[in-house]
Image (cartoon, rainbow, N blue to C red; front, side):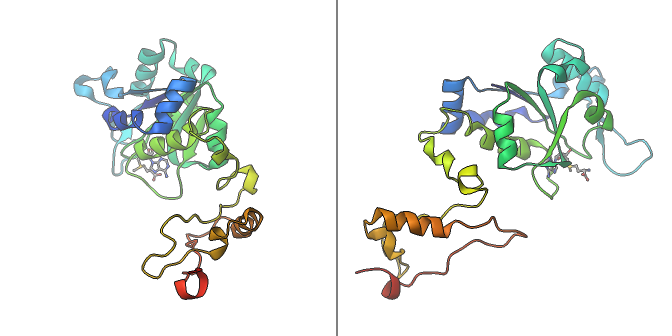
Length: 242
Ligand SMILES: C[S@@+](CC[C@H](N)C(=O)[O-])C[C@H]1O[C@@H](n2cnc3c(N)ncnc32)[C@H](O)[C@@H]1O
C-alpha cells in the first residue's frame, strides 16, 4: 500500500517510520509512506502556496494551481487524473467523521493520498476537482491536517495484515465487529494491589470461564458526549483476595 502525504511540513512525519506496527506494515505488506511539500513544486515565486481569500476576510487559502502542480510533479499525470487511480482525501473539519470502519476501509485500499491543509484550508476547487474524499478527525479545529493524517495512518496501518505482533487483538478490540462496535473491557496487570488499589478478584481466580464472562460483562457502548469510561475504584480490603 502506498500512502502519500502532501503537507507543508513533511519532516514532521519522519518519526512515523519508527513505531513497530508501522515498521511491520512496511516490511510485511510494503506500506510505503511518502511525504511531499507543495512548496517544492509551486510555479509561483519564493515558495508561495497560498493567497488571500476572494471576498476578503481573515486568513490565507491554499491555492488550487499550486496543488495541481504538486500532483503533476509527484504523479506525472494531469492533476485531475490522479484521483482515478487512488483515493485522494482532503483532511478537513467538514469531512465525514473518521472512525474504525473508515480506518478499515482505507487499509484495504492500494493507494491513498492525504492532503493536509493549513491556514483557512484549501481552495474549494481542490475538493471539487482534485480530491475524491474528505475526512474529519473529529468535531474540532486543528491548526493543520498533519495530526489528522498521522492519526489516520496510525489507525489504518495496524489494520494491515502483519502489522501487529498478535493479529487476534484486532478481532475483539474497541469498535470492532467482534465487540459489535462497543468498547472493550478494562485491563489490569501486576501488582495485584498498589496503594490500596485492587484488581477484580475474578481476574486472579484462574477460572478462565469466569474471567471470560467478566470481560464480556464489562464491554460497554462507546461513551457519548465525552463521558469518561471508568469502573468505580476497587478497594483492596473489599475486593482483592489476600
Ligand atoms: C485551521 S484549519 C482550517 C479550518 C477551517 N477554516 C474551518 O473553519 O473549517 C487548517 C487545516 O487543518 C486541518 N484540520 C483542522 N481541523 C481538522 C479536523 N477536525 N479534521 C481533519 N483536518 C482538520 C485541515 O486540513 C484544515 O484545512
